[in-house]
Length: 550
Image (cartoon, rainbow, N blue to C red):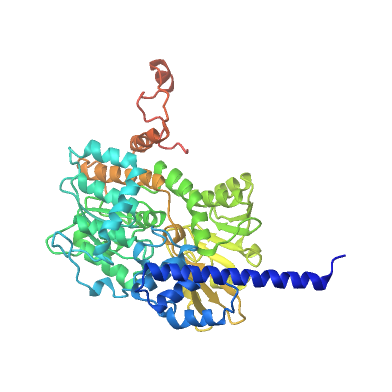
């Protein structure tokens, strides 16, 4: 057995030797540094020593840090910006719609209160900071690399200018991908004025880049409700410019023009709508006989439904939840309200990570699909007390009510993947007895009197575009569909489209899909004349009847 006393003496002797060696190193380093730079002051010399590990008492060293490095407690403007970036990096940060470059800006002045001018001398825009245009341009260039089909359409039709004379007013998410679409429309001859359909999804630097090129953009991340409607009005109501085409996402722009500017609305040649909420509004107008212009339902086109709604949400739902909550999905109980294409995409992703997924549905066909895919279909009230996450994807209102929120367990997460912010009854949570605590960008703890916390994401607005990003390639498919729909409506001979809601022609859906196959080096099989005659098809398509369900 070893002698404990002897071991202790040996350790003490070794430690003393290490301290002496460290002091010698410090002395040598000090002498060398001073000889090289005799003008070094004592503060700098102390900093040099603090970088050399020693076994001296650390109390004095800590005191030095508190006394000298005041920037750690009182950061400069640059320091605050860097600190803000580093804090958000692990949670919500990305140079994207999730966390715009300007998120960490110290300028809290409303863009409405600022006068800004682009390099062309124009002030017909309202964005967070026009000086961010160069950074936004780089974002757009990155997006273009994965939107080759839309760029291909731009190059093919640019010389013909099929949208010459078109004055398009748009209300969509303003991201790098949307910017590629807007610039394509401009290249095809259109004049554009644009605003955002979501107060949280705008990339400020992209809005600045578009404004710099001459597109009148009125949008910034974090708008108030009043700002939102003001921006829409500024797009529509401007002297010497009257829109003749609408590209909408959610129906807010269409609704505003219909209600406030009926004479302008009647002169619109066509509306292109891409969301289930906006399409629902159009069908309501049509049914009531109040839709006085033709409209194209892009949301229910195959290239939107089966790609943007399904594949985009399959990837972006996890991105949004991970960035905001850092939640682990294995073993979590999740309710997805709605098993349409968005719900299907969300469920596939959650199931793949080991979550226990429940479905709520009103449609027996979708409910049966969910059952056949291995999910249990329930009523929300049956599982409300036990689930960890609720995701709404219905396009409806009050899908999750205050009574149900009251019964959720502590730490539950509630979010929305539908377009509108009506699916979760957020308004009922803004009462005196509940406390709201902002913990991250787009993440709020709603605290009940007993201490229970429910985590609400993006205040009930669209999760993926408010809190994360969406795949650029999928958005290329949707954007190409939108561009073709605008070209079709604008150039259609009088009488082809009446005052009603139409689906994109099947031939155009197939054309959009074919443009994107080259990315995968995919090669289509061609029908022989005999095969085409047997099936009763044109060799060049369309290959499916309009009633076919993919």
